[in-house]
Length: 257
Image (tube, rainbow, N blue to C red; front, side, top):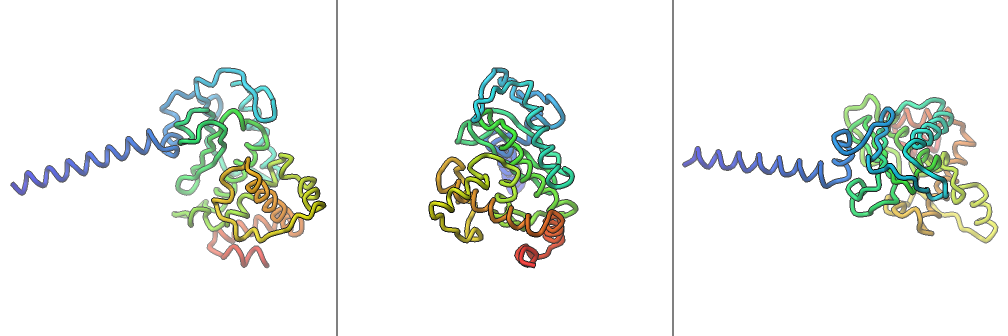
């Protein structure tokens, strides 16, 4: 009886593991992206996977024509922009181009996001509406920062690997040349009495919807703060800050020094 009970327990645990694996890889955005090479996608260039149903011509949010052939061109242009900012590009994210809701959880199309797995694995999932150089460069900046902070480490530190979300988003905003993040946009707000606020109090929830007025103000303010810091201190100071955080130093001590 004890042996039979033991087998039942082991079988139940095995069934639980298998079921959990199926749910994770089939019904979560992370699992979906991790297994993209086994799905109905074509790797059109290294680490660029396009949904095989993504064969139509469409337009992005800038009313630019997007088809299967010019996606790699846009991605490579964005990579060059980020490489020019950092001096080189060290990360090698996997790009997943699809409008499927499976890729974007319950939010459907119109999404661009980045997530990291372990130390160096980064994925950028993006739908056709955001297929433009600015948004892609924004997401690549996230993956580049992630790679530089976590390379050589066994474990990542927290959700933002030691970098606060406001700095992470502000740095990405520097390479994102959309009008609402521009110096001109900030100057216009200052002219009408825009009140500066403490970006260090912002949380991940404050950046959920980039199309909302409040989120755009948060993105703009963070971009302004981080760009000002980089302009004053230089790119070498930024690279030293990133290396310092990777080595375990406190971000705010490095940022304020």
